[in-house]
Image (cartoon, rainbow, N blue to C red):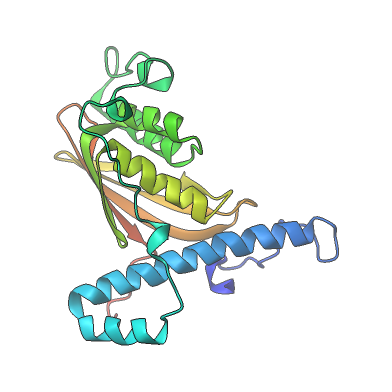
Length: 230
């Protein structure tokens, strides 16, 4: 797992020293987060291979029949018709705050606010508050695509983020760059950090914006860009 630690840092930098009462707790938390990241990477590799080399996937499935990763990212079925209680706007909470787009903001400031709120949603453990935050920053018909699958609508995004919290307790997604935007699209970088603040995965999002600047489609890429020779 040391390959997930930022270059130049020891896996134990900034943590309790070995033998310290807190060291075992720190290491256990790191192992949980890094284990979750490893699972995400394996599933992402399988998804990519499924599109281009189905025979390879079948072979790997036979070799790893004891692994069951499907539950990690599969959203729970909604089971409600559109307009039911589960999809109505919450009467109280963050969703009902005054929209910062309403006055005295430039388009650039509005996009920054939407993306900052999106990161708040990723780091919100409470499902109802998370959905309320998503209502402030993403289109109701938004779609999230990452190497593990597609997730649609406010409830789909809420559940996808909830699976992240279940798989990697204590981990956070933090923005690592500014925004680069043009013609209704924006890109920015992010890091997943463990409970001690060590980066365990980096990536970028490329997002399409709707007419009011809310996120309409977000495409996540895991890890750094590959070298030219693959």
